[in-house]
Image 1 (cartoon, helix red, strand yellow):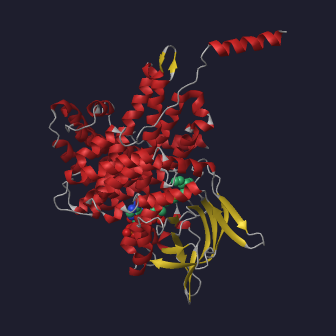
Image 2: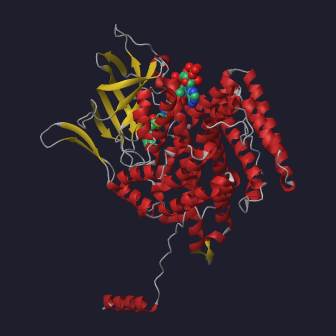
Image 3: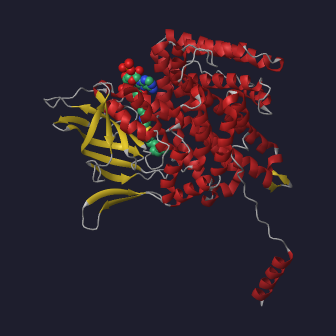
Length: 582
Ligand code: UCC
């Protein structure tokens, strides 16, 4: 009887009350909806490029929320699978990927996601245009951006160090905009002996009658379905001896399949089960006499491969910014649609603070990364009267200095913001099919992929010590700020210059002391440089009459906090830290 009444009551409620269903956040055309990107390009690009670029990006901005996103969903639903043996017991080590993943490769080619950087149709602005597309592509790509990063890096490397044969074959494939001839590349560097410390590489290269053969284990081979890879190995001399350390490493080009479409003498041990990026086939492999071609001079492997990972590090930065924009766009839209305690959550002060803090950081990441893309483009197509007003040598130095900074800065900011913004969705943000947990897991890779925050901070010190690039940075920022006329922003300009002085003093004092001091401060130095570079670009943007609507307010709030944040060095504290972690 009770059950019957309860059921009737439920039916009654159902008929007379409208059930509440939360509206989902919606993504609009990702270019049209992005005021910062549109205004940035409107200011930066010469008039002759504007129309063609904005049309292309508007089309692409639609695709990344329609067919491209569907490809990525298919790739996410159908992660790669390793088939180790055929039915007859032959070892085949074939990796099966989804049609979505394969179509992402085709789209990447036809949209010119790599080739744009090499056809250089937009002169010194080619990299900026390419990066704008990558920024739109990444969050709808199921991390196909990772193979693209290595593809672009390999193209760069071959452009610099490749033989005419490699340029004719591999380079042409890597930079093709024809889906039928486009190749992707891997980067086989990391080994079990030391992820970041490649000096412990155990893979050896032996010269035979028919060329080089590689033997060893590679521990993180992303894009194992690529057509080629670049790998580090230690050359064995005639007596079987090798030179230890990173100076003993040379660089090799490898085609993954032989003429019979079989693997080039390597075994795939397993596809890694990662925290995220699960559509991306990352494998552990054993090289068992893999045919390879030496690239560049013997012993120059690390130096030469750095031209590749400096590109992949920039991809890491631009994909972080794209991912940042995606989670922010979702959180802002959701905050408008979701109501709690009688108003939209976007009206609650605490949520306003969360969203605004993320937005300010996002602007900083955007400007810092696009500055580096501008430097890269101007390095590749140097013009004397370039918009940066820099000598070629200084562009190179700034590019070297700011690449690790942009990488580590954007990675850390997006990791933090993703965690904060997940809370905006509360419980639903913790539910798998909302898509937010995937973003949360995927975005964690940014501070690991292509070097951790600590490794990149030390790389920054290496760059600073080698070629006085920090002095160039100081002059560059001072010049940028002096050109800003806007009366409204003078207070912030003065503040930024004072902060730059503070950073200079801190670094100068540390250089005079033991190396340990500079090393302990390396992260703080990196983030301070990142803050200062970002703030200078944000000020420059805000001062322009075509700036994004609230750009001045954003940079003013960004500069409420001193961009230079360096903890003084204290040996006692370091000793204490060391004691308490044991
Ligand atoms: O392993 C990876 C996968 C992580 C897992 C991610 C999950 C998979 C999903 C992916 C999702 C998308 S990624 C790879 C991570 N590993 C790295 O990025 C390597 C990190 N380590 C470094 O960056 C180190 O700093 C090394 C290896 C570059 C340093 O090696 P060494 O042995 O200390 O080398 P040196 O002596 O410092 O540098 C050798 C030469 C020098 O030139 P010369 O000989 O002229 O003095 C350096 O100036 O190389 C030059 N060099 C550079 N040049 C070194 N670094 C650079 C650079 N960044 N730019 C230009």
